[in-house]
Amino acid sequence: MKLNLKNLSLFNKILLFSYMITTIVVVLIMGTSFHLQSKQLKNQMADKVEDVAGIWSATIDPDDIIKADYHRKEKNPSSERLETLLTLVGEKSASFLGAYIILPEEYQNQKVFVLAASDLYSEYSFESLMFYDAGNDFISAYRSSLNQKKVTSTDIFTDQYGSWISSFAPIIDNNGNVVAILGVDANASVIKDNQIEILFLVLLEMAAILAVVYVILYWGLKKVMKPVDDLFFGIKEISSGNFSVVLPVRDQSELSILSEQFNEMASQLSQLFKSVSAASRQFGQSVIEDDESLLLGEAINTIEDIFERTKLQQELQRAEKMNAIGQLAASVAHEIRNPMTVVKGFLQIFLSKDMSEEEHTYLKLMIEELNRAETIINDYLSLAKPDVGTLEIIEGREMAEQVMDLMSSYAMMSKNISLHTEIKEQVNIKGNKSELKQVLINILKNGIEAMNSGGKLSMTLEKQGGFGVFIIEDTGIGMTAEELSRLGTAFYSLKERGTGMGLMVCYQIVERMKGQIKVSSIKGEGTTFEIMVPIFTESPE
Image (cartoon, rainbow, N blue to C red; front, top):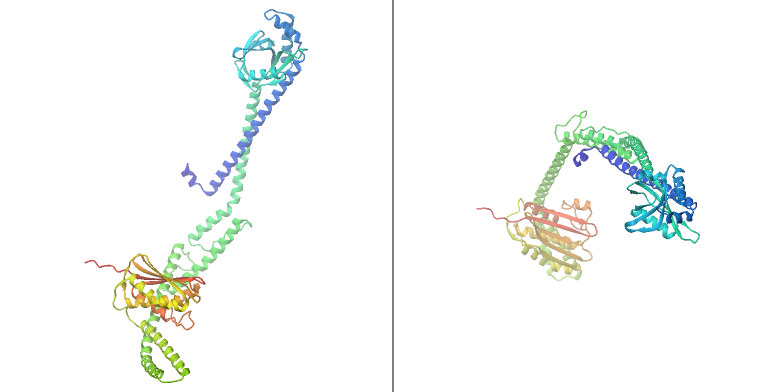
């Protein structure tokens, strides 16, 4: 059953569940209606029996009851009058079988004595001067009428003679004493016959209502689900490569608005795949002609191939740029370094001579600028290095603690910055020790300079897969997504007097060691660098 429900279409599922809910509601309403009608019919009959009992009890002479009770086993005029009167009760209404008089005495096992009974009971062997075994419903109503001196009635009950509703009315003498109880019976089979007839009509009405509801639901859902069918058709067409499909917009409902958005999406996809075809031709790939359908899978594969080729071209362009910068840097640096060394030497000689305070200040500024220029030249020379040099085993813990010790005084003296080191596990990595130290110091120094008002600078060492990772995190000014995308490129720096060459050298050093640098940043909150260097693994003998 579960499998069949799962395999149903969306339309059939909605139709099935809607019809099931409607059926439950209709059954509940019809069942309630049938119950109320049956109850009303029973109450009406009970009220009628009570009215008859109340009226006829007033016509019975208490003296006749006393005399008939006195001559129980003898025929006497009082008994005959009572039986005639009781038979007349049944003849007045076809709904009533008859009446009987019960003495106000209850015997063992809920037995009562019938003093007189209608002749109409003769076929049931229910007659005058007999004991009757009363059931719980009968005896309960009998006692209530006897004790409370009022008319009472039973619910529908069944005994050896059939199903009945009985009403009891006390017969009271002039002294206010109950001398007997008048009982009047209504044949409850009439109610059952009416209930069967009502039930048949209710079932007939319910079947008609459910048939009409099914037709309306089917027609309404077909109309409502038409935009959904259109969407399924459109998706199928898109999947097969037909991007010119246009769905009809039937009204301004939510589903129709969805169709409008689908048409807009199909139009954008058409333009996208046209661009894909054009880009594919530029890369020299064979593509499907414009007048033929481009399958969605083929288009996605083409896009992925274009992305790979674009990424490869960017890497090649970057490598060419780095190579050009390295060659230029090597030639320029060698030409400039020697005269700068001479100039710096003479300035230091002048600085040792007796001069005025102002002249000494100027000389110090010139030497500082020459030192800065020398640093930039060294960065350029680093770009020109063809390889990383000798690789060695580096203890990650020792390296992290060493560089943090080197930067601690600078951090505290410059901007009141606190340093924190966390070594999660000992990691031995493979690389050039001096160059890795240069990378870590450079990035730590950048982090310190990014925190103008003090803050926290932390380094964490951990293992991620086959890499030892130095995580450097600061609480500085942070970077935007655009600034982050340009990080590590030549001549781009966020510092006032920076050239961008230092971080570019860091990237190149780590790449030469077969590692990588990952950067994440939030503007105004801080920046995190992850320097990933391959872990040292012993080669098998």
